[in-house]
Amino acid sequence: MFLNLLYAAALTMLSPVILYRMFRHGRYRRGVGQKLFGLSRRRAAELVGDHRETIWLHAVSVGEVGLLPELVKRLARRSPDTGIVISSSTDTGYDLAVRLFGADQVFFCPLDFSWAVSRTLRNLRCKQLVLAELELWPNLIAAADGIGCPVAVINGRLSERSAAGYQKFAKLLAPTFSRLSAVGCQDVTTAKRFVDCGVDPTRTRVTGSLKFDNAPRSRETAEVAARMNWAGVDAWHRVWCFGSTQSGEEALALSVYRRLRQEHPELRLILVPRHPERFDRVADLITTSGDRVIRRSRNDSQYADQWESDEIILIDTIGELKHWWGVAHLATVGGSFGDRGGQNMLEPAGYGCAVSFGPNTKNFDTIAGRLINGGGAVRVADEAELEKFVRRCLDDIPAADELGRTAQSIVEEHRGAYDRTIDMLGIGNSRARQQRRAA
Image (cartoon, rainbow, N blue to C red; front, side):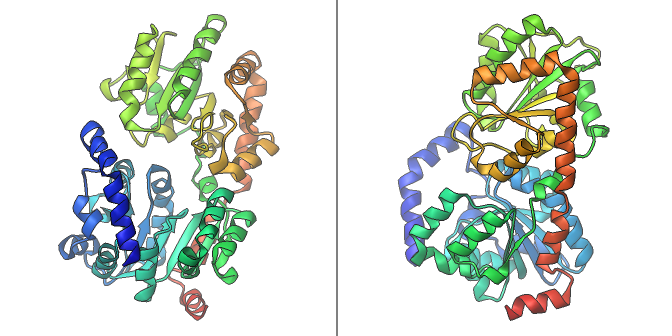
C-alpha cells in the first residue's frame, strides 16, 4: 500500500511534465489502460493464445528489445508448448517489439501498482518473468514471487552509483533483490554489486553481455546493402556515422565535418539522433547552417544520385541504426559527450568500423574498457580530439581498417552469453528448474 501511495504521489507531482510531453511530443498516450490497470483478461487471452502458460520478457526500451529476438528463438525451441510475450515501457521500444515479434506477442508493461502487476501476471498465467538488464519494480517482483513465478534478470548491469543508491534504501529494496531467483551478470563486478544489494550469492552468475552475441558479424547482408544503395555510397566515399546522438552532439559532429571535408572531399556524414522528438530540431540545425538534409523518412531512394558533400543524411526512423553502422567506415557512439553515459558500441565494432566515443561511457564501462584495452576503439575527450581521430582515420586508411578488425576480433572473443543465459534460466530443462526451486 505504501508503494502505491508513493507512486501515486510521484505521478501527481510529475503530471505537468507528463501532460506537456503528451500534447507537445505525443508521448505516453498509448497503452494507458495497460499501464494503469494491467492486462485485461481479453487482451491477455489474445497474447497467450492456445498456450497453458507463458514466459514474460520485459525490455524497457529499444536497446533492451534488440537483445530479445535470439533469446525468444532459443526459448521457443526449448519450450515449444509455452507462450512467449514481450512488454516494453516506451513507445519506441513497443514499436520495435511489434516489428520484431508481431502485435500478438507485445504489450505495454504495467506501472508498478500492485493491482496492475497482479492482474497482468494472473491473466498471462505467467510461469517465469524475465527482466532485461534491470527493471527493479518491487510490487511486480513481489507479486510474481507470491504466486511462485520465478523472476530472473538477464544481461544484468548495475552501476556503482545505482548500487550505492539502492543500498541507501536497503530496508525497502533489499527484500526485492532477495526475491530474484536468478541474475545473469555481464561481469564479476556487477555480480558483486547485486549481492551487496541483497541477491543470494548462489543465484548470481556471470553470463557475459548479450550485446557481444547480438553484435553483427558481417556487412554482407541485405539490410546493409539496401541502405548503401539508398544512400548512394560508392567505393570512393569514406562514411562517418555518428549514432545515438544526444543534444549538443549533432552540432559537434557538424562542426568537425565541415572542417574536415575541405581537405577530405570523400568524407560523408550520417547522423542518427536517439530520440524521435528531436528529429525535426536536428534537421533544422543542419539546414540553418547551410547544408542540405536528406531525411530517411521522406525519401524513397537516393539510388543513382551523387551524394554531395553538403548533403547530410539524417536517420529519422526507429530501429535502423544497427544496419546504418554497417554502411560506415568510421563510427562515433553518441550519448558519451554529455551525462547520458554512452550507448552500445558493439554494433559498429562488430562491423569492423573504426570506433570512437566520448569521455562518459558509465553505462557501458566494461564493454568500453574491453575495446579500449584490446586496441579496438578510441576514447576522445572533446571536439578537438574527435577531429584528430577522424582526420587520422582519413589520412591513414590501413590503420583505421586495422582498428576495425581488432574491434571485430574482440567481439568474437566474448560471444557465448546467450548459451550461458539459457542454461541459467533452465527453460525446458527439468533438472535446472528443480535446482532453482530448491534454492
